Amino acid sequence: MGDYVVHIVDDEEPVRKSLAFMLTIAGFPVRLHDSAEAFLGVAPGLRNACLVTDLRMPDINGVELIRRLRDMAVQVPSIVITGHGDVPMAVEAMKAGALDFIEKPFEDEVLIGAITRAAAELDRQAAAQDASAILDRLAQLTDREREVLAGVVAGHANKTIAYDLNISPRTVEVHRANVMAKMDARSLPELVRMAIAGGFVPK
Image 1 (cartoon, helix red, strand yellow):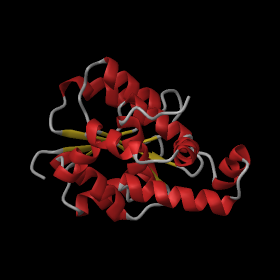
Image 2 (image 1 turned 180 degrees about the horizontal axis):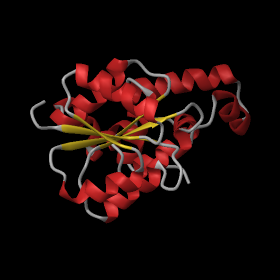
Image 3 (image 1 turned 30 degrees about the horizontal axis):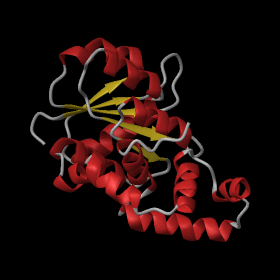
């Protein structure tokens, strides 16, 4: 990856070291930061950098970190690592400008793949982010599928969506599968990216 440096921000030292070891073995130059504040101190001078940040941290969390980078006009592709149940917060991070979010636990290849996409700006991801193409896909959804999509993007479980829409969880699963297929999304994070890029973000 040449001089493309991955900056890891996490307040837990074992996590930082574990991620650094894995990414170094994968061929990425890595720098470690024990807080968002520490990273913000060096962020303005960074070039060819990618940020991997934990979502939940004391003082400045991952969402606020990404917002501050945006306010500072620092262009660093950001990947958020989040625990189970943090999807709504991860969506907030993506609204603020995060490129991706990855739910724990995850395989090494998932993070490596996300970083590689950030570095190489793969054509397929660029096409997936194209607002006009996403709007065309959104237009293919039925009203019910759009309601289910709103629930999914909001981070609600199938049972919650089913209760809210007065339908069965099984019906939600069917609609959700149809939404994934019509949007050509291969994962929940990708579906959320598309929804945000297409302006489909429930309040």
